[in-house]
Length: 471
Image 1 (tube, rainbow, N blue to C red):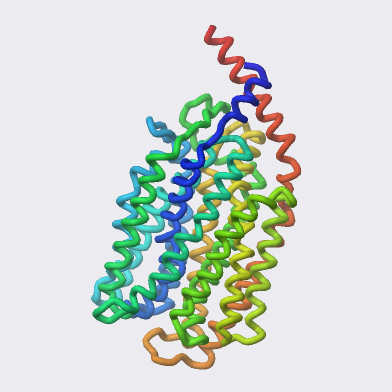
Image 2 (tube, rainbow, N blue to C red; image 1 turned 90 degrees about the horizontal axis):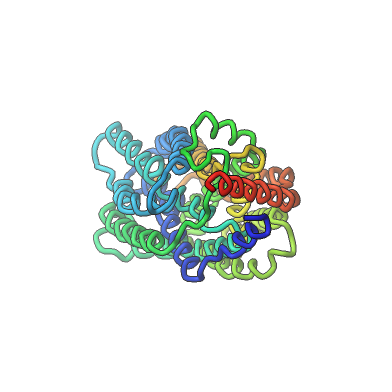
């Protein structure tokens, strides 16, 4: 096969609209429990299970060490997986039910001594987020790189994925606490209610992922120096660290996840203690994530106007604006909601572009090293996300505890109230600035056309060589 034939083969690698929709359903599935963990779990531990915020912060911080390692290990597992369902897709089937069960175990904290509670939380937190969620979400994300190599198709897949992504967030942030508040037997303060509602959400999420598994297909056949064999770690690890764009995206994911954790967790505290109404959190998150659905669809029409990097920088600017606007009137429901709207607009280009940037970095890595380490790169950037989540949760726990926050009190001290405001406004602003600084060093958008041209030429030669050898 000559180069023209190879290029035509790649260009014809189309994905059906229904398959793109199914992949978007998988994104909803991964976001449901992730949103519970990042936006509500800390409050559940402190205000329902009555565990110290400092202890929770320490557990989450320590767990992220294991979490990051598990991400990288899972990436290598995916790269070495061979099955009749493909390299990555098969893990959707394997992990869907364990995903639901592990999510429920997060909430079933026993009413025992402090040490026993701490051990239980540590074990179940790591079971869910270090083991199960890693082998659930990472192969799902990696699957896109095997569905097609066509950049336009990848962009379309990711646009639909990101347009559907906020649905999972909204289902949790808009409805979860409201449903809890109207449930009998104690409402939001009842652990039993938390367990029941989490079980409904978790098994619903598992069903969505099984639908995704049944619908999507892997099409990309890998032609690299591994020759179709399982990639050894001694080759994969050096290849990973020779990829400068992977390193940049890893750092970006750390701080973007810290932003998501600060914005999600502190929004709940902010609405409860400063605005004075936990139901407002639904309005804030609906504004944030709801606008993302429509803005993402619009992004698909205008994304050609700027590079992916510049879209992400613009998004970070909106995030900063959505935070600083609260300085005008911190207790204003309208401003809190409008700030959420601005943050949602800001998240749109970031979520719409960042995963295709990872796919580009995978192609860059294969061009640079001759090895396609899709799972390893995807897992390492995801580990950056989990590091960021853990660092963010730990910082929140430590800072809140150091500034007199106590979830058992009916009213918080002025120092604790000011701390909540500072974290929600200035903490998010600082993280937005750091994201912009990292993106300034990203140049792959300009380099990509030449890189992919050379990569396609290499692979066309490899295909031709194999055909000659087989004759």
